[in-house]
Length: 103
Image (cartoon, rainbow, N blue to C red; front, top):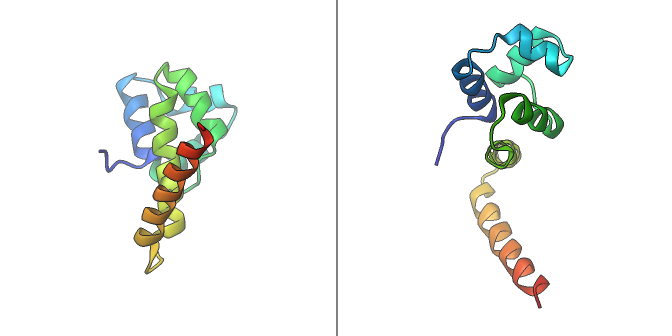
C-alpha cells in the first residue's frame, strides 16, 4: 500500500522517465504551473489528465486510477468524524452489490 498521493506518484514517474515538466505540460496542452500544482497536490487532477499521463508515461493506467480514486475518496471523508466507518459500510455495500449483480 502506497502513502503517495496521485500527484506525488505522477511526479516520481515523470522524474524517473527524465521528462521535463514543460514537455509533459506541452503534451497535455496545459500551463507548466498547473501541472506543477497538480504534482504538489495544490490543484485537483482530473481522470482525463490521469489517463493522458498514463499514455504519455506508458504505464499502467489501472494503478494510476486506483491512486486517483483513493485520493478522491480520502478528500471527501478526511474531515468527517465517521469517515472511516462510512468507508467500511460503503465497502460492504459494494461487495454486496457486486455479488448480487452476478446472479
